[in-house]
Image 1 (spheres, helix red, strand yellow):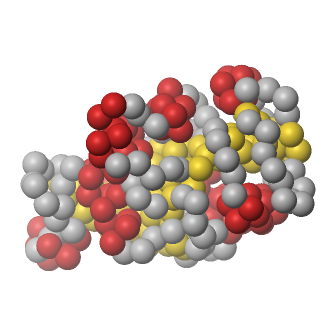
Image 2: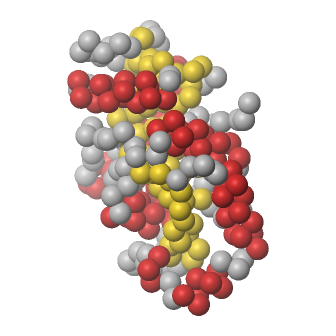
Length: 241
């Protein structure tokens, strides 16, 4: 793995966006490398590699790839899936950070956890990322994947209902493991109802989080990528040294 953020330039990059990505790289203590279309750097210190975006994603394994998450209308989705979303969905063994043009350096992160299916590498990346940023993490579980038309949020769990759900032995074990693994960091938990790929992005935007992270190995990935309206981390993970 190379100790860098690799910015995949699929089009034009504004001075503000490039400056923020550069600041993020400095906070994370990573080199910033730009590949793809040649970009105006506006005096921002970056390294260029003369390879295509496709070659970079296939050949490089950085701390994370960075992409600008463009705004697209639902009608556009009917005719052509955005290139950045295709890259993320087709390369699930890499880490991707997708940022809106006007993004802020993440201070509040909401992290989706799939009960019984999370691996240590995802959590290791998340712990390292949050720790370097000094960010607060809200772990979110979807405990009841019902077919509700509208997302039902945590406040709509009746107290007795939530208490019963939290008695699940697998969930209780995972909560305890997270408390131990993230000791010393600021974190909390939320429990939602609904379709995970819809309710979690909705909740993340409504509660004004700066970034949503999801493990790349989850069955709802396509819905997360399409529905997320804030910055998004699609994370394969890091191994502990």
